[in-house]
Figure 1: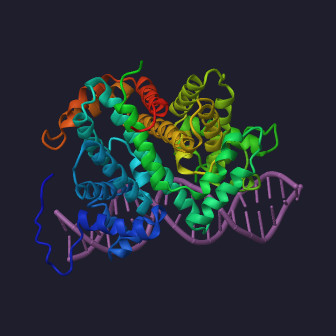
Figure 2 (figure 1 turned 60 degrees about the horizontal axis):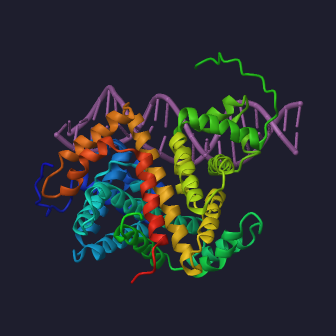
Length: 225
Length: 225
DNA sequence: ACCTGAACACCGTTCAAGT
DNA sequence: ACCTGAACACCGTTCAAGT
């Protein structure tokens, strides 16, 4: 990646890839995923939509880059300690990132091969190696953790977004889900019904970590008997 | 400007929710997620876009219903045997469903609270109960499995879609990813580099099942020492 | 009740024309 | 090299008007 001049002291910044991505993140945070349009972005940057195409290849490029900026920031802020607690820290870091910026979740799950994905995978992979997991089991271990982290985080983000769409806060939303589940047919949905109560009071973050520990336990435990 | 040459196929059945969903599934399968538009759907059904709104509330409703139809079909086709092998069967059933119909993956992960999600959760939950998992661990166990199944399946579907976008078959796509990873910076990405070789030859389905077994192992193993 | 199709209010993206 | 803004080819959705 060729570096450009970093003398950013100018008062009126001219358009640049960085500035566009920065404005995109602001727009995504304030208006959600649907709020990011070239027209709104152009207005915010006091330019025309066509100008953006000089710096950004497409909307997908824009979303991907914005997402990668956030992920890189998050990962850089983490301290590295023991392997297992580092894995937990990475997991929680991504969970919180997506919780606060739901659009990161969909960007992350929609486009594979993303640099962001490799960044996260690398962090976790190094810890899996440090744990002494045999070579041939490393891929499965990292794959399971990646899928779980991205899967739960995105699901959580989607939940919040759905709640916001319906104008509910977290409590009322869970209450509504709980009620809906408790009214399911007893014969067809006994398990979902039995979970209805737990849904209402559960702590997303704690449950998320419990799942991570479950997978770590599977990774740690001896080979299948 | 373009004259309509297509003699609209006569409509033998009158419009109905079921017929619209059926046609949507055909369209989604043949043209992908972006191929489902009200205009294309209306043409296929020899009607106008407005007519569809009499039966379907919105596009989101349409996608959700199409997704639910597929999931219900898939789950109904599964035989129930022992708890663990039933969980594996559900997991593989969803994996294959999403592999063959990638749009199901994004519909499933985008909209939570979906009936489809409850259907899958119920099937898995019943098996978790049958395994004798203590009440207070059931939610974490089911949550981990759900997240893993939906996460990996959707990631896999996204990969295939990306490959198709670039006009590559599965082999060439994995080859490309493998090459990209092997060219990453050694200092920054040692783990991803070391996985580059394995990526090329790996079997998605086998890896997916390996992850399921990893989680099942975690569920089975005794409480944290 | 159900269908029609034009119209509305948007999109992402392109491109001749400017500086 | 970089920016402008009108224009193109689409969207989902609505609605007066038909049967």
